[in-house]
Length: 424
Image 1 (tube, one colour):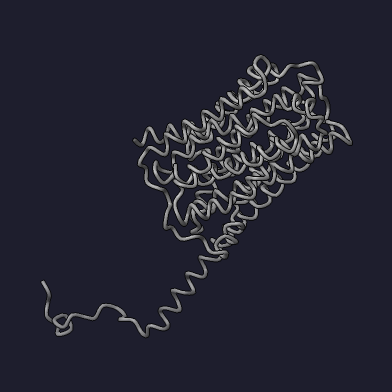
Image 2 (cartoon, helix red, strand yellow):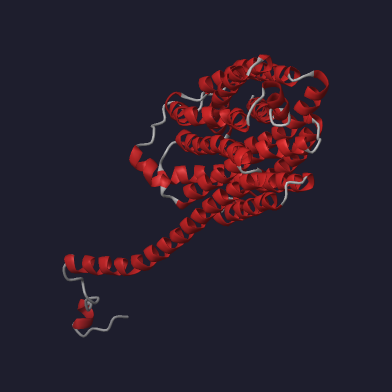
């Protein structure tokens, strides 16, 4: 039953990622059909992040308090309804509302669902969730682009809705423990202390960079490729290739285990991603866009795979609930997922695509600088604490001797030796 549960949970995560990215290759078609501006396109793409921002922290808190099973099943049902509604959307308001509803279910799944998975199958099962999302990121754009091109926009969405319904029903039929029901929620003081932890800062910065770059690339790359004459199927194929790189990178990081869950690895991933965005500042030719997409996606695979276990380790060290930690991380991602496409859409509309890539690169560089500074401060603080701890220990030992009175002194002379007798 544990294996069946793990496969169904991975399948639900895969389907959610596929449905999330299925909109990317067909966004130019929606823009043409509904006459969407750059800001409106960014709003539709960022709707999932906006809804996730609203539900992530409450979903994590409720999971810690009441258990994650019911909340996760409700998320699966909500995504089913929302995806079906998106397939039937005939206007911009209807499309936006469907994406907001889908985003709410998506955010709950990535918070409560991960808590349920970790509680029922162990923390190591979380690494497979990122790999599953990577596979969904491959399948979603490829299948959506091909089906939409030959059968219409509604077909891939109807297929996704059916998949959500089947998987959610399968999870409901399994008798799996509800997760973290009854755990005590973290108090505000511990949450603030966790926010000052350098591992949490690094994980949050990695999520910021991943979210901003995802939103910018999801908006700018399809639009520019569409202008260059690429069809929805071709755009989906490009994103599928990038998704394969994501899945491969995530699998390699997962295989490395704890050796990869370090600050230097996260900083290296941030550096590669930030540098890749500079290509878009120099050129927006089709080949340059493909290079940007592949490099940034590969770097994001490292950041996503490392950030979750890094934050979970810090949560255990700081004594906060896993649900609270996952909710905090997903809330940060959601904020950047909203700002990324919106800012990129406005910048591309008013300043051009190169400027949009440049602004995204500048924001990512700032997050990288904060991470490096926090890591350096943490190392200096640890060295200072170690250096101060040694004389403090010596002073405490001396004080203990003074307050305990005179010691026993040297061993007393045996009585028989003092009497002059020889001791054999």
